[in-house]
Image (cartoon, rainbow, N blue to C red):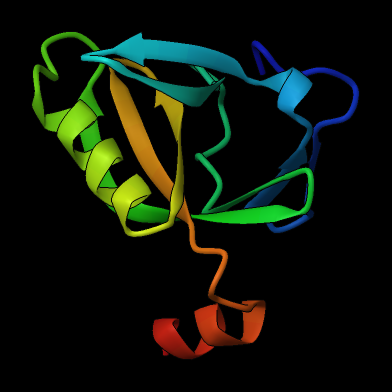
Length: 115
């Protein structure tokens, strides 16, 4: 997994990964800066949850082209930040997978939302 250091760990079911901010890079685009995890061409599927320094991000289902995302990606980041949520992206091939952390949600809330 490119871009991840020794602190990165993946659970046995491959649905979650735990990192530190040192494992991430910053994508600057359209006036926003957002953390990005580079999974490039990793053989395993991208995780559903990414935990960074105790903050659990979940995959939103949205993806953006790495090249040509235009104003759409920065607008999404700004709207999430305005709502008080944090964002990050996992780069996978030619796509950026969108993840969000809502400080107002607990892990129990996330589980209920998925059911």
